[in-house]
Length: 438
Image (cartoon, rainbow, N blue to C red; front, top):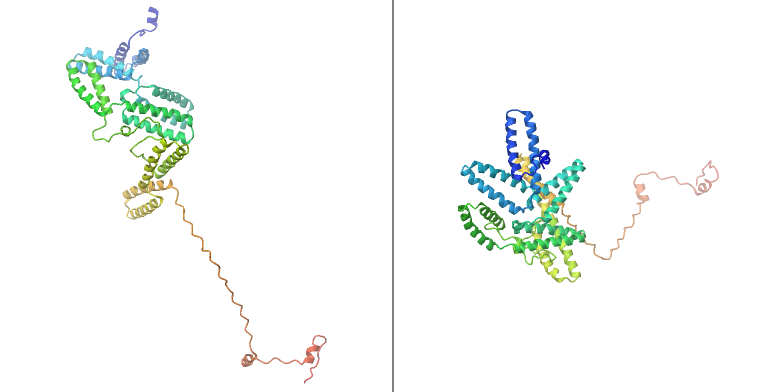
């Protein structure tokens, strides 16, 4: 044992003891840096890293503590530290500060569901950046970390910290994944998604009512005064943690009830979740896609005579179809675009560039929305009436005009010589040398 102690002087030290040594070493390092004793700075910096490693190992060796219990411990030490500072009991302050640091370090090993969810988004962004850099080694490491986070998120107990709004948001996200899985015929994934939705609905049903929470809050506010007077920091911390949870669970004053509280049934067995609040659609194309999807589900349910699902789907389809009136048609968008283009031209002519920017943004949005919509089909012209064709008789060509002899003579033209018949017969065979008068 003595040999092990010489090889590792920090072996067997508690988390608080290691944290105390770490705080003293960090203070010595700051003094050495101020005195510009760089050789001592190098040795102290190496010792700081060693103590941090030993402290983290000691924290990992501790028995697992639920995050809620850990938060109560931390808050209790903070409350006691505030009283010690006020009483100027600095020795006690130092002990409490060391204990508080060790508990905060231990908290890093027990992240909440929301903290893991935030870390999941950060890791996914890092994976995308590594893919663009083609750093596949970093991608592999981050993928393993992401998988570990997902496994821990599936096992974490959120307890009473999950509000109705949080649960409903997760149910909505799972519903979208379920719709996509059904559309792509990934039926193996549908079963798992449906089970997750059912578990979330069960958690939502188990949440206490707002009236119950309000009564509990009033009782705890009376108990906190007694705990403060008795300097029972542990009890006061428990009350403050519970009050914070109640504030998160209770809806804000004047807020409408959440869709989860209004939902009927809530076991996830219906074809669609019953929600009174209409879904949000960015464009008319998204709305039409949803209408098409619900129409297909309704048709399939009618085909297999699942009238329970039909009763759920038909009101949903009617409500979605009513939402069509909230989106402009292709023709209305075209009219709006033409109007905006005229306004933009007028603003450019008057050099009102601030107005130009606003109009251009609105114009781009309208053009983008119209690009997602198919243009209306042009109405074909009606075929001609089937009437009997009328025969068209073309006029006969006019005969060429022949000048009359009388008109020729009247015009003063010389009369052509008259050839005797005898000569006319002989012209084709031999030469005529002499003409005989009649």
